[in-house]
Length: 171
Image 1 (cartoon, rainbow, N blue to C red):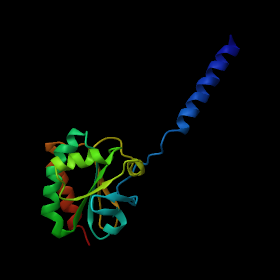
Image 2 (tube, one colour):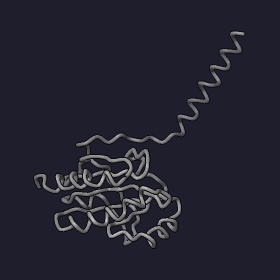
Image 3 (tube, rainbow, N blue to C red):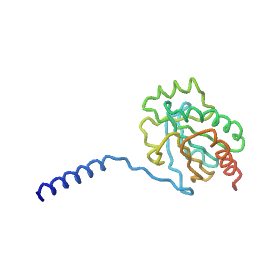
């Protein structure tokens, strides 16, 4: 009886180790930590985060099937227009496995900000993205200011306050 229990435990333990070996590593990014660089194909060519140093960057991870993502686009378009001259750059990183899905979405709801495509999902793993949409505000010196999960009407004012504060921070 004891041998059977030991075998069951050993099998379960090995199965757990086996499953854990295939899980992706995701990192929790703290405010003040350096934002991981990325280089992705974009709607207008390569998009590289490190090329935006000196700007405040709002990186938004989204997908065509995400309802709150759909709601966030008009707000991100408005923020890009309102704060572009002060140094805000918005980068929407699409995570659809097929870029065609994103392009259909963008035909219906155009983005007036930079769009990049990460169909392999490497960038969200580096950022520790747990749900959609997830956004990160990055300071002019490339550090995470804050992270936000989801999007709803009630978030708009607070998100804009965060953007304004980052833009007004010492340059």
